[in-house]
Length: 248
View 1 (cartoon, rainbow, N blue to C red):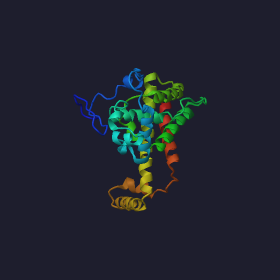
View 2 (spheres, rainbow, N blue to C red; view 1 turned 135 degrees about the horizontal axis):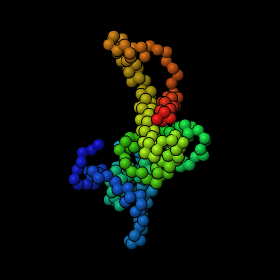
View 3 (cartoon, rainbow, N blue to C red; view 1 turned 90 degrees about the vertical axis):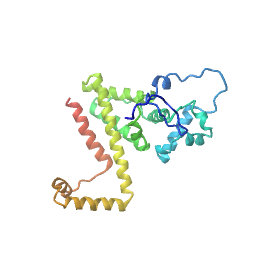
View 4 (tube, rainbow, N blue to C red; view 1 turned 90 degrees about the horizontal axis):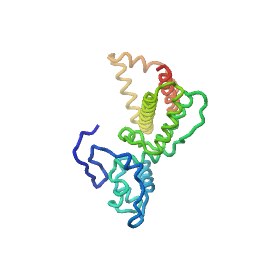
């Protein structure tokens, strides 16, 4: 976590220097206009959608208030009335894409299948928006779309017999697993797109396994390789995680 600071400043690129973070009530509940003054030329939804599109195409590092303003044809300073800093914008972006998650799903009668469905929906969303796993590691808020999906997940977990706090904990653990796995998938895909890099890593591991100091690694690398696909690997680890929920 970032070190604590006594004041909050807004930088020109939309960065936040504050420690208090985003006030969720102010962000999500106090959204009405006073009715005074000229109607704004842009909406918070349009600005958020522009930021998401920029992150999808160029990565989260590309998202600055200046770049987003250029995307919507606005002046940088005019955006601060919608999102006073990049931290707030990130909260808006995460909840915006969470609106792609179906908030309802008919229970199958098999809670494990229902929880797996929740995890697969999260994985699909994060693969569509590769910046999302990293964003989830720093955000704290729960916007309306996120809350709607949380309701579905908690309902799926109810038949486990876990109490309320444990169900929240289980959902947080599930989300963290999905985010970590997707981040790994994205990194591995980048390696696969670079044959020279992949070959160099393979040569390195072979040399390490042959040095006599890593017998466990040598044994693992000498074992017959199993067919590997990102989907199969995700499902295998997800099954282990969900089986653990049932044994609590």
